[in-house]
Length: 132
Image (cartoon, rainbow, N blue to C red):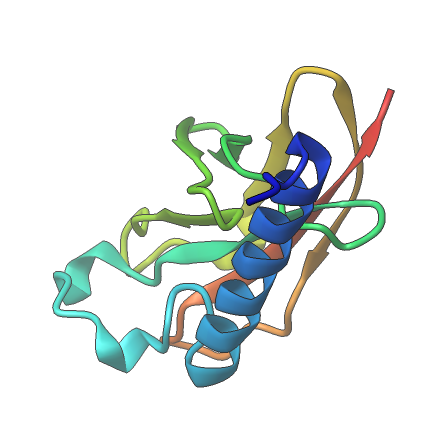
C-alpha cells in the first residue's frame, strides 16, 4: 500500500480542523452565548473569538492579549482551532475599555474586528495575522 506524502497529510489535517471549526462555530460561536456560561455574573462578559491569518485560516497557539485601560492585561493562547476565551474583568467594566490584540512568531497583527457588543453578552473579537 502506498503511503500519503507529508504535504498531503498536513493538507488533510488542515481541512479536518477547518471543518471542525466551522461546524463548531455554526452550532455555537467560539465562546457561546453569555447565557450558556455558569460563570460568576460579577465577572462581567467574557471575551472570545478566533485568530486567523490574512487568508482566513485559523491560527493555533497564538498569543491573545486583552488589555483593560489603566488596569492591566490578561494573556491567553488559542487552541488548535484558533479559538481563545478570556474571563470578564467585572460587570462594571465597559467593553470599549478592553483592547484585544494577537501575536505569533513569524506574523504581525493585520487587523482586529470586534462584533457589535450587546449589553450583558459575551464580547466576540476576531484577530487577523499576516506572515512577515
